[in-house]
Length: 444
Length: 153
Image (tube, rainbow over all chains, first blue to last red; front, side, top):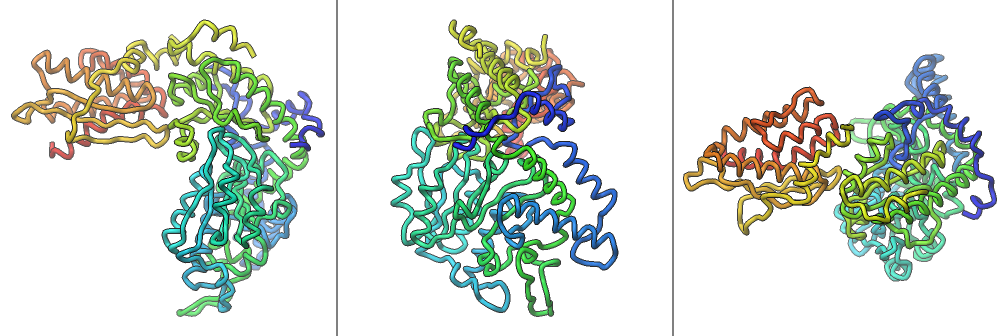
């Protein structure tokens, strides 16, 4: 976050010009202007992304990587341009970028490719995947704060291969127990899979303390970057991870597309996950030879229009600059956390953790279920997420079943944060739980 | 009355804070229902008379949002009232009641629950305008329906 402190935040005028590009932000909800504070679930889309996707359908739609006609050539070029744009965004090679349907599929792709390696399948005739085979005695290490998408595929991989799934526990303040991690990651560890940013606390994972532990024992490192890609500069190579995944729709891009970065040598060695068309060279009735990556992992007609839309979203983010987005969100996060701390009966999950975080906070309202609390905000035109946010183990660790998550995006204003704070302060009074201090302390 | 006040009528807030019918007995036949979206949980039992022909009581335990908890409490209250009035539900009557309740809740505000038939539970009419909350209100009623189905009603 040092970058965030050095770089100027967006000015109000700049934020307004960003907001003007998002048509949905001008609508009303329940008689109030929409305050969209659910970008961690999915971000809104700027006109240019909507236009890029629909222009593709209107002007260039064709199947890619096949057919010799002009449109097929154009579509292929746009699709591969999108890959180059995403590769440059991550500062990796284009053959290291695989498009998937979503981040969940990207994580499953890695888990299933390792699973297929474990039953002796290779990338083709050459069994180069043997070194990545997992079996009894091997360990896969994850953490207690993962999104279910970075937990369940590994539970299943462990079940299929006989490997053991272990996890780094979470401390009371919501941070990872790094001392425990040093004991858990060891000679038996073959894979460390970990989130870059918690989707519940917003805290950035101290990768610099964890990745070297995995490297020291030769384990693969998988990074779930869904909550970091929209908020901070993502450089998988600098982070020294083997795989990184993120979703397009949280990065102001379309739904239906995810990205997998994989180190070239690994993608070339691992067997496919899904099998069928678009990923083969020669097929007989008995067997098939597979294309090199990334095509080997993009079975079936790919997400062409979505890739084109995602590339436009990446250009949108790059033109603003992720360092400036981070600086802007840093100020909003401080305003949000400071404001929440002053409201009686509100617990911010992981508030005691002083580690750097992105623009989101999950709260528990004393005496009010998250679903009811969220309804009060919805009534005020404020969109937030309620529930367990696909992180049941972490909620259990915090001793709650559900929370209310407020999350910012590039278009979020200080005024919207203040509206959310005011609405949060009104929750307990609405349900008859006000204490005398509430009204006074609620002023942001 | 604002939309929010229509949803959270005083009857609903009272029932969620002081629920009726809470307390299951060990070994009782129950139906456990969950709303995975928000983690609401209801475990519910239908207690039958000796002849196994009429519902004597609805008992339940649960945790979750005020709508889900109040709805379970209101169902239990409605059962108490039917017994007190000498009109304890047969399986068929309860099935019809659940169907009517579901139809109203899914009507997006078009159908109101009648007080004559639903008593205080009519206050749940406001839920039908909130599509995301219909499942919360249905939870206890779905549990009752599940028990009726298992009974072979």
